Image (cartoon, rainbow, N blue to C red; front, side, top):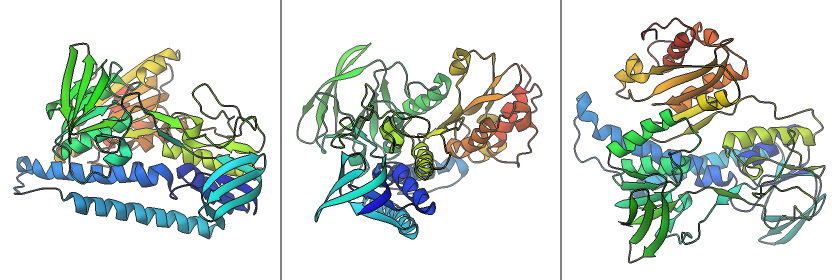
Length: 464
């Protein structure tokens, strides 16, 4: 088989790269070892958000009495929920496969190995398939990292993949790692009635994020009964019949906790084994990630890498944009990763989203920082939906009013962040946002209100 470009990995980076390459008229081959859509579509982003939706809806119904909504016997049918989740995933996978075929992409299911530059061998169910190709794009993603003594067994000690396929909610779950995945699982299973304990080795949840933002989520988790141990670590796990005893070392001392499930979420490792990248001269960094330039090209001409295998931040939308860049470069186009901002969202309860610099990062970068906040508790739409927790924080340059970053914690934060990502990408000032009319009553008004404060003329809060 001959190709202009061969993409190894069919996740959000790989399949977008393949579609774009097909649109550009390249003979395109996409190799996938498991399922089209990759980890995100099949085992991560989409199934987790499906279950989070159910969890949140169940919680809202149960608290409905304060709105005058009286219900009895609300429960979650896990079997039906899992069936619905799989229907969502299957529909999206089918859509991606149709797009690939519609753009004349050849799909080869199997495990790829780079034999030499320009030659890829794929082990399929029917044997070996040889591909002679002008360019190769590595889009193999990552896998869950494991800690010594906390190896996944698929039963008591599980990862996110197993956590999304549980047939009933555990009574007690201990989550090792308070990052994005850990917080999403904590909020989700807390909504299903599980007692949650989080063990995080750093001094805050979601390390690296704005502490003010994270505190809102932590307070809600703890308010609903979660136990959170910061600057702590799991020392050992003793497995029994259906339960595990976990020794946790924390600043308060050592304690033993008995839980039904231990969910490990301590980071990712790149999937580069078996590709022969280093033998071909592809530069790999100290953590095992593939090094590229801004065109997604590695140290070997004609070999590109995109997505999580390049390293953090590990975001599906980042992988997709990088995939488009790699495809265009493979087609000889002058594409580059020249975006200014990389928005992010965590689907915990309440949601967290950010774009651009935090207050601390802006100060470190040498800016004269101005911060302004607007609480959802002062926003009509947030109060009318009964979700008034959180705030919008705008970080701007005090010298010229340019928006440097925005952090949001609260309802629909993931849907609100794109406005400010566009604003930062276009070099907008707080005055630009403040002068932009936002429909009332809506949640995005909080962004306008915070920008009005930053511009010095707040309306719905007192001038400080």
